[in-house]
Image (cartoon, rainbow, N blue to C red):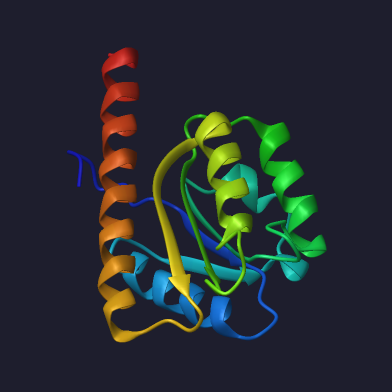
Length: 161
């Protein structure tokens, strides 16, 4: 951690229909819990204020139709896009099926928006259900998010010194 006792405020939000993205969200939350307390919410029950209150946000989705975000994720996507918080460190993650031509297209849409509007730290795409190896991939994504957050914290502390 940076030279402070401050722990980041962390949230994992997700939408899941098959349960695969929910499983991956739990793995991501488990990896992030190493660095601080993690709130986890399905997007349908997420308090909108959460987007303004957290330091690190992991956003998980499945892909709908021909590479689109599911309806329930569109509103959250727009909320994050309108916030434009470059100091928010993000992770885009999700599950998909390579049978479809646009594998994890919903994750790609999130990635592109998060890259512009936030400080995107990692992207994680999983084929169907999470496997044991994906736990390590979540750990790496969490570590990358913490690195980005510490860098921003240090940069902001230097700017205010």
